[in-house]
View 1: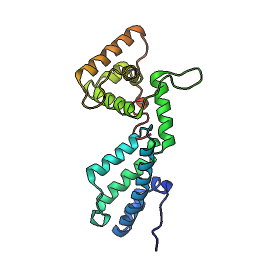
View 2: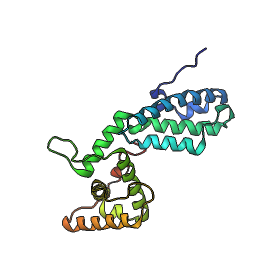
View 3: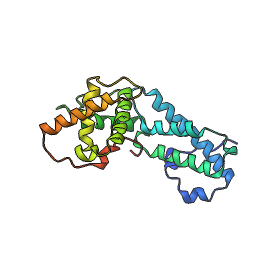
View 4: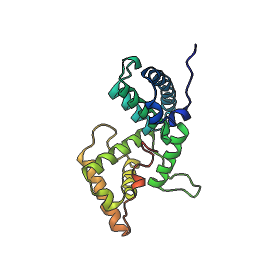
Length: 211
């Protein structure tokens, strides 16, 4: 008898109460069915070469850290952990090609500005976008007060200028020169425009894991 498939909507609606009532055998079967949907969605995102999906990166990272053991060899907690990670993946806006493209467009407009037509003045490639957020995360971890001092949008815009000008290292480890250049750009922007640098928490993770 063929195993019943599960829909993306059903994955998003899985509840801890419902899962808690399942037997280990039922959870094992569910994990197998959810993995099929995860793989399908991850392959779709990978084939869309221009799309950068933080949600897909996190899901792949989960599998790299925890492996894909046979559900029959997993503990109840391990199966629940994978199901909750899968639920978070499919609930994220960037878990679909259309959603990831929408988020990318919104980010590009926020970072580079908008043309009269409404299109972004510049667009980042998948590699550039991944590099962008890697530098952003490392920068705000290194300089913990920068988001409050300048605001997330201003940091993103200054970093966007660096990537647009191809002034960051292509990939790999970041270095102090990247951060010094970014600090200088932020200082210059503050001198040019004295305004309200209120921290906007929503902008920091726009298009990231939870979106």
